[in-house]
Every structure is written in C-alpha cells, then in structure tokens.
Length: 342
Image (cartoon, rainbow, N blue to C red; front, side, top):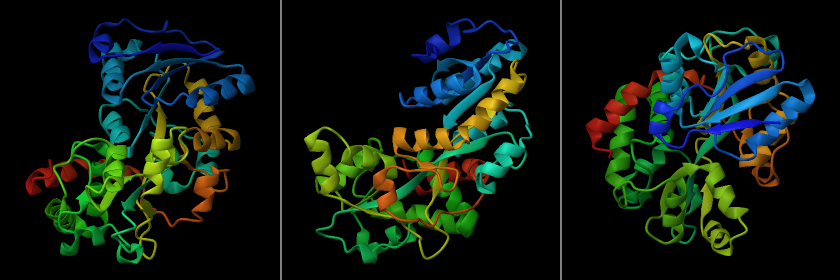
C-alpha cells in the first residue's frame, strides 16, 4: 500500500511537521514527489509488489519540497526526490538536496545524456519541445528548426509561454550550449520580435491558440498535444486535429529533450532502498508505465511507447547531457530579461 501525504500550499509545506518517522526500515522508502500524475502510483505499486518495499509518498511542487528537505535538515526522512525538468533538478542539486550514488544498473540502462556526471540525479522519462503550426497557413517544410521561428516572415505569428516557465528556460539553456550566449540572445530576441501576443497561459493554451487562429506557430511539450488528441472530450480532440506538429532540428543536433528525473537525498535514512527504487524506475516495466501514463518518451532505448509516439517514428534527439540545461539556467534567465521576454 502506498501512503500519501500531499502538500497543498506553500504554507502547509512550511508549517506541517515531518510526514514520516525518521527511521531506517528494511521495508520502506520515503519519496518526495513533484510529479503529479496519477499514473505514477502504478509505478510505486509495481515496485512494492516486486520488492516488498513500501513507498511512503509525499507530494508538493519542487520549491516546496526543496525547502522542506532543507528545513528538516539531518532529521529529514526523505530518501528520494523526483521532479520534472533538468532546471528544477539542478536547483535541488545546488541546494545540496542530492548525494552522489554509484549504480551499475543505472549506468548500463540509462544513456549518458540522462545521467548527472557525478551521479547526483538521473532522467527516467523524456519530453520533447515541439513546434505546432496552423496547416492552413504554414507549409511544414518552411519550419525545420527552432531557429526558423525567428525569421521575420513569422512576425506576429508565434505563441509561447512566459520566460518564467522552466521549460522555456531549459530550451534557451540548450541554445546557449549550441550557439553561445550571443547566439542564444539573438534567438530569444527574434522570438520576442515575432510574438503574436504577450506570453500567457500554459503549454496547452499555446496549442489552443494555434487552433483558434490567434497565431500560426507555437512551442509546447509534446505530451500536452497527445493529451488533447487522446482526450475523451470532443472539443479537445477537435483542437488537436486543427494543428500540425513538427519535430525541429532533425537534420542537425536533434529536438530539444528534457526529463522527469530523481535522485537520492543527502542523508537518506533508507539509502539502499532509495537506490533500488531508482534502479526500478529504469526497468522495462517502469519505463513502459512512464510512457503510458503521461505519453512521455522512455529514457531507456527500446522500451515500449504509446501508439501515437510510435507513429511518429524515430526522432533525432539532442544528446547534450541534461545537467548542462541546469548549469546554463542562470544565464538563460538573464538573457530573457535583457530581450524583454516577459
């Protein structure tokens, strides 16, 4: 059985006492999770069934969990922290949340790009940042890269989220790695010049804006589109059917990749169980559950994906180490500020 203890508000995170007794238990692991997908529960249930180790689950957003772990200090019961986006994993790393671990299983199962160089955290699912277009106004052959979005011909046609969004910060962080700071700033300025509106809403809102004719191009993570496509709501499916999806930079470095990832917490009272949980997340069974639950790409090559993702064929993905996205995050934020990307 999975024991759940949700963090609902920042105040709750600050005031609530420790969720678990700080004990070393042979049959428990304490997981702090910033992933809020019901499908993840199947992962933890499968782990318990396979190992007999009970997963005690506490949920909150990344900043809440980082703050809580710091506040709990050496008495923290946290064994594992899991979250989404390399930028958030990097923030946790910078705050001393994670410890280095060595695991032959993780080194063998996960590509090098999905592993922190010092073993502080690991990527277990992949999300790609795609381009969406209005097929009535855009020939998909005209957009083959993220860089093409800055062409003046698309002035007033690009919808994209705020610079406060970690997904966009990581995308720009990848631009810094590939083009240098000056080139990345030129790209960001080009996007600002071509915006159809001030940034607003989430990824799904950008896709809806294309469908509604507010802009001809948008940037969003792929799974938001698949959720609409696979929705039981007719209106959602109609929205998805009105837009096309592009996978940029296939002739070059590959599409930008981000992760859902986790690491073992510094001072974890159930360290061995924590490592076992991470190793399980890289297993064939867990990788398929990741892919099925939120339409994410598995991190392990060859793991089964959803039919929709399979239908897209083999995508060329950017192979820079995910940790670089975090390292370049501060400069990405400064660039956003300089170009006026709200």
